[in-house]
Length: 155
Image (cartoon, rainbow, N blue to C red):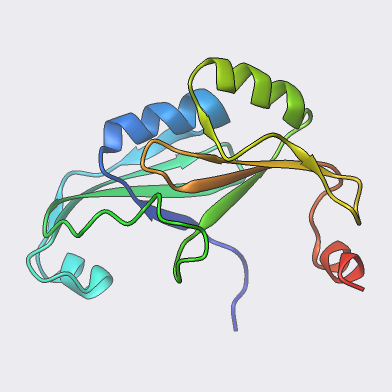
């Protein structure tokens, strides 16, 4: 049985660039940065033969984001693919003013997928953006997203 959420891991093209992005825009700080990994452990954990990677763990004290960059055995770039592509992830972050953040970050060159919209069922604002590798990120303003809230919104 699962006991709790642990972390999410994203494969990125440039570890330093991604660390800077998630620190600047989401306040996630590096809590651990590993020496390069290679060998049987990497192959077992990733399924990539001959893979070598760099890894960093970022956190705000609650949420843990692991970022990895393959330095050997790098695959094709698929991040930034349409959201309807199977396996396409997105991360959701809660914020207190989606519209203000959208305006400020747009002026700084952050890529958004349109303007903030309001939900028909929950009176929440949200907008989708992309990190430097094109990984989708949802910014959401409103009550905490709980399993009960999700179930009621779909009723």
